Length: 415
Image (cartoon, rainbow, N blue to C red; front, side):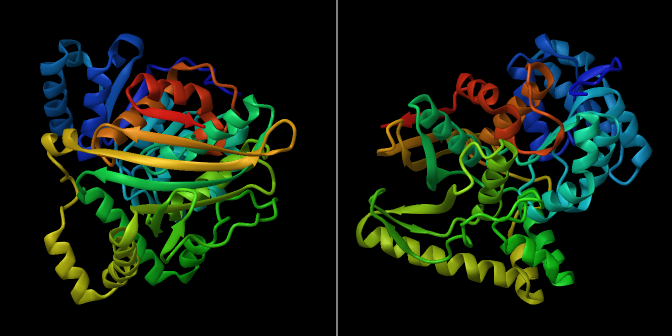
């Protein structure tokens, strides 16, 4: 089955609604017409906090005062079964997902309920594939991870360029993604996820293998492709005309793009190659920034594994539930550039470029938009993708691209 066959009380349940990011997603949905098109419910651990959030939303749109409230706990499977069985879609903002996320995924898979989240934790996605993919396929549950800043710009940007090649009668062979200019703030939830990942690596060295393997999210039945590890030094990309350094989110984004290709029956080709980095600009200044970035990423991750240094870092960073204020979010933005190489219908070399932009803080303002529209897409759009542990592009593709464009994001092919 591809849709729940039993009548559900709700179309969409927002799980973790009272957290920092959850409240942003709730506000985005309410401000942007979700109450007019679907039956939304808010879910979390604390009724008092849910009621306070509902009051805040009702001050924006009075109809929000009638939103149903559902109580659950990440470690109480019965409560999660009750939530999952009541709705077509669960949208989760409860992280770190490796710590709090598996039971709600399992509940959704059991009840044939679609699901989306914001995780950037490759080890968590790997575990969900191993534990739940086959049953999700059988039950028709579309489980779609990584529906925020990691990894929608990468995944949908690459899909967009694949479509552009196909429309010209050709096919894409390689995509390079460059995270460019951006402005925004950090939240405690994101930092908690990173620290939890460091803890997992220290306890279980097999986690490091998952993080380091460029094809760790690939179907087990498929031989790996030609890509090596993510960039960890300074490079000059002559096509882009800029210096580049490592991009910390490449560790999840690139794996998601490769899984999309596999789940799309290798629409990009079995020899498809993908790489991701951060562009740092031109000239000496760009080179210096790339060099500093290369050193800083490695040192920062290393310090998180050292007890005294970690405690010092934690005291100076936002705590879970904290994040940038409204002014910071609204002053934020991001720009990503993509360069795609392939062939046209005559077999001649063709290069196309893409651009993805957001007009708010990437990790919070735009991520609330991306996750909110992903949830609406799963709940409302006529999708023909099967169930399974999936990716945004392989599940929602064109439908989600158009939703995000209408919501104000830029996804554009150039050249």
